[in-house]
Image (cartoon, rainbow, N blue to C red; front, top):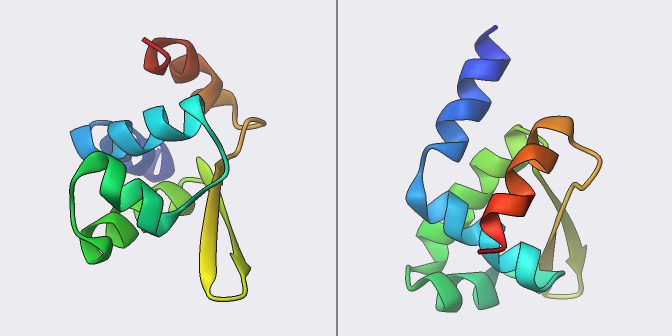
Length: 87
């Protein structure tokens, strides 16, 4: 039950929803690109992404000096939200 509560709280944040929406539109994206697109600092974006990673909504991959993010499209709860984020 705690895990579900934590993940629902992660989805209740507008900035995190913006991150997910950007990844729905085009993925993978770097954390730097996501920060620019949602209009917040790199540090803030990284913290939001960490919350989404903890809930397994996003996967991260380090390639040289860049951290790339993509949606975990196999996540059941996330699938329910993806159609709403495309709008």
